[in-house]
Image (cartoon, rainbow, N blue to C red):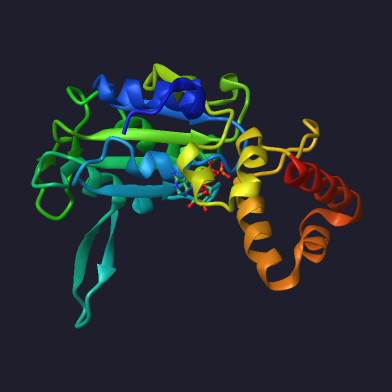
Length: 242
Ligand SMILES: Nc1ncnc2c1ncn2[C@@H]1O[C@H](COP(=O)(O)OP(=O)(O)OP(=O)(O)O)[C@@H](O)[C@H]1O
Ligand SMILES: [Mg+2]
């Protein structure tokens, strides 16, 4: 399906074009709840696998590349982590690795991420069970996401591995299309008319669901508070008149 740039939004068009052009390291950044993670898991992943890694301050190297797990009777077995699965998935060709909240990675985990996301020619990792050297398959790609607005806040060595960074400033149109029709225009704008007050996709989904059970006024009050609810109900009433 070909969608016009107006419907699609320039940012989503950029993401699709960049991936289609064969760029395999992309950073998506911007406000929460626009569909960055969803797109990272799906876009340009035809038939292959997607592995997801969520960075926290406590993320360990083991959670990225793998760990030894007790297998009973005093034995241990090696359990591959998501990064190595993504390197070698799809019969050795490699799949997609999604690294969410990448600004939170630090210490050992950051060093490991640097190694994992290095260019395919130089990336190498030694499997501790077999002793074999493993490298990423030719189709391996990484999409990182973050809510950070200043790219300088991302460690420079990591940033350097991701030359293409796209600021996602609006929800993905497919995500908006699953909402009730009267909410779609507002959801695409990311607000109910008041630009100061951003309303995320997740809030729109919750409102759509909750109002079916509780009615719009109560759903709005529960989700957006007394003041927010008035603005939203007004906006919806005007929309309905139009
Ligand atoms: N293309 C899509 N089609 C259908 N649903 C979608 C689509 N994109 C996103 N969604 C839904 O919208 C919600 C928010 O999406 P997602 O988690 O990808 O946002 P995000 O930009 O990663 O947010 P955050 O920055 O907070 O991590 C999710 O419930 C997701 O399932
Ligand atoms: Mg996300």
